[in-house]
Length: 475
Image 1 (cartoon, rainbow, N blue to C red):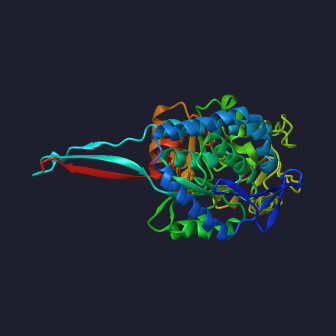
Image 2: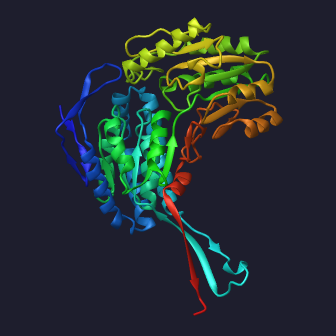
Image 3: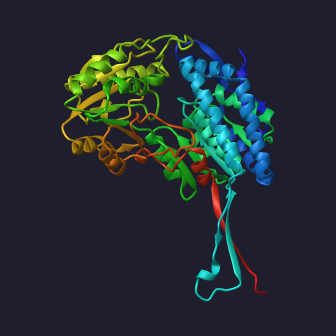
């Protein structure tokens, strides 16, 4: 079995140690992956810093062309790349193809954004006593960016870090999730073919707990961008200090369904939002707040639609839900379900499990302090909660200390606009599920859900510094 190596300065390098990468669905070892060390990370950062010195001088046109070539190569290899994703992540093949389409779009957005860096003129003579001066701003690259990515969207979330960074002239040291390194490894080959200079992308695989400190604390790293757990994100923020940082730390996305919402039109969409990729999505629909007048009708329809989902082999095109990322996650979440049941919660459907899968689970009669409600489940579980008044619905959704995306279904404009103002979330999605995202919209959370914004145009701001220049023309 071929060992997947580290990508250092434009070439593959082996390591003393490696680990066996297991398929989430079958459990079989699918690859041997290099296990990097802090010394490898340090060397990668040094190489990236050296490469940055020349890459920052490239033109916007040159950087855009590299990204456009990445788009072309990925389109050509779309089916192959989707199979890699399904193999390492256990994502149903139809969902993997969808992720590849989004990833291609993300790199295309980045290519277009490379040509949009601009500044503004500053009217210096607007200040009293100032004459004979002109002033303007420009955006300049930062240097080395450390990118730490999760398992759930290993192509697209990597693209949201690499694309904006390369578009503006930065170099990147990437540490992909230990379960999903294959997608990043193949992207190294694609960027090489597309003409990215050696050293601008460095990839170190291995344990996050062993590698992240060097990645985060090394003074040559000018920005850290991390997607993952809240506990790790908080630790990283403490370590980064005054350097730039973007954190996307997950959520327990909530949705309000008003009496005016057409149940038959929205129930399928809600089921998709709750159980796509076995709920292992940062904005997976986890809490549904339904007006009491339609609660029974909606819950019955939701359960019926959920029971139509097929759990099985991710390479089977008819599969809707497949394996969770590892057996430990199945154990964790079944314990959460049992705990909620002892506290009075009811499992309306689902809740059965194997070593590697959990059937889509609908819970009712829950309380807001249960783990399955107040914490991020990251599993195929959704709780349905009745409410009496719109005020109560707003309060229930806002009761969480997380706030990434929130949604509302309503035909009343005043309620929609009020939700837009009062829901505590980075994004408010009106008449759709909170799982909705396009790759050019600003994306990020409030409260404990994160810090900063992704979405290519908005990520570019965090990947650059604003520099001001003024000239005295009176000499």
